[in-house]
Amino acid sequence: MGVQRGVQIKSAPMIDVLIPAIEKDLSTLPLVIDNIRRYVQHPIGRIYIVSPASNKIRKLCSRKNCIFVNERTVLPITKNDIHYHSSRWNRSGWLYQQLLKMNGDHIVKAKHFLVMDADTVLIKPHSFTVGNKTVFYCRDWSQPEYFNTYRKLLGKKAPRPRSFVTHYMLFEKSKLSALKKKIEAIHHLPWYKAVISNINKKKQFGFSEYETYANFMYTKSPGSMILKSSMNKSLSINASSLKEQEIRKLALKYRSLSFHKRKIYSKAPKA
Image 1 (cartoon, rainbow, N blue to C red):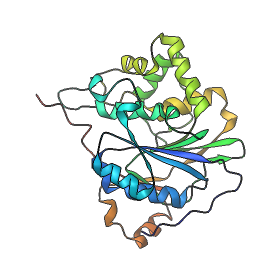
Image 2: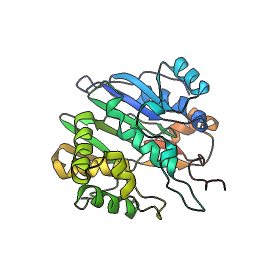
Image 3: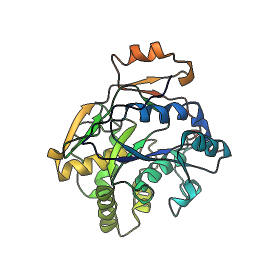
Image 4: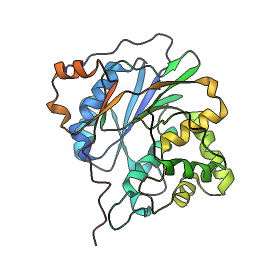
């Protein structure tokens, strides 16, 4: 797929981009980066790739003009400090990536930053602001446990207008910081420890950074949010196997494609 700079909206604020990734994501990550530049209708400052130490990902960052961030510099904890697994599944790395995203305000420079999952590719133009309002892309189903954890973290039920788990979201640094300070004030713990300690460890899907941030925003100012259907399509094929013509056809119905082939963070720990 050829790369081209997308049409930018003059009034749109400049944003940075944050993408947590591991080497298993290298089959999709180049396309994720290219299509952010192609379809995001904002001036883009910097694109940060947050990853474990990896020469392959460093080389990709150099080739794609992105900034490599070693994930060990983002939080005071590592994946090994999280024990979130059963005999059948291990979600420790999955949760760690969410916590990395939630500390993105300590990485990026711009006031707003787009968090993008490394297996999701935009295939149509996206704007994340309209005037002073933020656009949130939504779907119609979620995991009930996300909202149980939200209630425990913030002391009130999530408004849940729709589900915000759609693989990418625009964060505002000051609002994200306010969310984390609120969690810390309630629990008298660092926010990431509060998240870890309030998850039901028996449930495989116990927390969502996207649901938590967006529902927090909705409780504060629902009028400042525009909710749009994400129209995301999940595929179980290699991203590189899709031809431009097939993508154009998919773009008639969908805004983004997710290539959910990664399994490394859901395997049970070795005995």
